[in-house]
Length: 86
Image 1 (cartoon, rainbow, N blue to C red):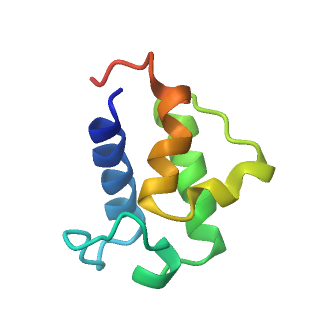
Image 2 (cartoon, one colour):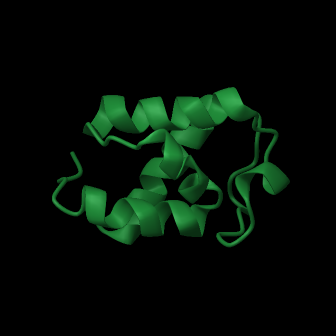
Image 3 (cartoon, one colour):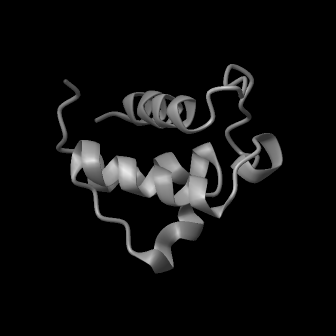
C-alpha cells in the first residue's frame, strides 16, 4: 500500500470508531487526541482493526507511533508495503 492508501485506510477505520467526528479537516502532524474525542480503547480498536483487516501486528511498545496521521502512516508504510488494497 502507498502512503496515500494507508492514510485512506486509517480514515476509514477512524470513521468506524468515531462516526460523529469530522475527519475531513484532520491535520496530519497534530495528534489524534488533540483533534478527536478518542480514548485509549479507541486506539486499541485501531490496532485491532489493522490486525483484522490486514494482519498487521503492532507491539504494545509501538502504540505511541500511532499518535498522529503522519506518525501512523510513517510507521505503517514498511509494514504494509506489500499489501494490495482490495
